[in-house]
Length: 171
Ligand SMILES: [Zn+2]
Image: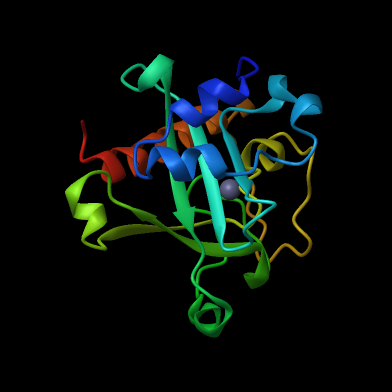
């Protein structure tokens, strides 16, 4: 993806207040991110361990981007995590490598506390796993696919876009 600016990222969020978007912390090493290896930007908030964010190129979003803010259920509930496969990039991890993220829905539904959840790579670095630039700590079950990298990144982006559509209600 094209390198993003701080301003464009903060303007892209569809499911949090402008105040929250202005306060969130960008990923560590933001200026040196390997943009050419990223299909979307996903990160854990360095200033708030139970927050995470993802920003996806999207024709309908503000400035061609849609940003979604995510919550990580607190540690007392993470033992409920069953899945070991990221639902975005389908990378298999040991169970601690996959986290259940919950995104408040956009608009009034979200303010009433409604969320949509997804199991995803704990660090949201799906793009790097797909390219072999980052390795799962422990692979639970490796399964080989005959798809090309391009096909797998397209599938991953499609999965992320489908999740974002659930958050925005398809708007
Ligand atoms: Zn992933």
